[in-house]
Amino acid sequence: MRLPVRYSVFLIAGVVGLCVPAASLRAQGTADQSSSSQTTPVQNTPNQTTPNGTYVSVDPLAKVRYDNKFDVSLTMAYDHMKAGPTLLQGSNLGGLDLTGSMWMTRHWAIEGSARGYVGTSGAAPNAPFNIRGPFVSEYYFAAGPEWLGPHNKHGAILAHALVGGVYGDFEHDLRGQPPSVVGFYNNQIAPTAIIGGHFDLNRSPRWVFRITPDALMKWYSIDYGTKTTQWDVNFGISVGLEYKFGKKR
Image (cartoon, rainbow, N blue to C red; front, side):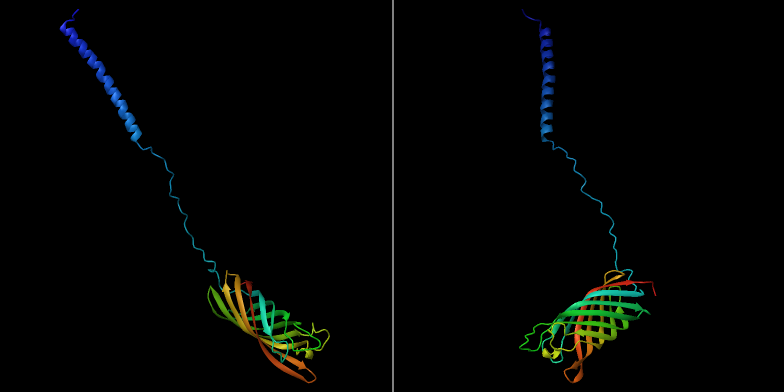
């Protein structure tokens, strides 16, 4: 059976109308998949910028004023000396130096110092006693004027001239023998003078790193039958800390 021509035309047009939308949807789906596979995923990265705080410069020496009433220092001390008038071998002694000052004006103070040094010393040939490296010690007590020299917030140079006495213990380790056997001085208290000063390095308005080189002068007597006096000059140095305190002048 043959369909009329116009029905055939309508039938073909309907089939074509149904096929075109399907093909269009199929093509669109393929394009979406391709676009989706080629798109780079967007990642949320954390903010890399960290806000910095404001830098505040602090000067620990800003309040250094040199107007304290008192100061005191405790330092490790060294003294090179000779325990006798004719000894060739010297003694290297170690100890402590305790020093304090009372400031009267901006540049002048009264300073006092107590120092103790202990160690061993070489001895003169003393057969048959065979005494070697006997113990010796010195203890200083002195006071005098102190002068504040060039200074700023970083440090200062100070000078002093102290006078007083020194006790020398030279017979402690001689096994009961007289000091003349080893060429030593007798145990005694003798006049002394300490001439030198301080190199101060400020660490804060109150704390100071201190170096103190000095000439240690003393007048020891010698009693080997005939009593005489000998003037000795030795070198001493101490290193330690100073603390400033007291009301402003």
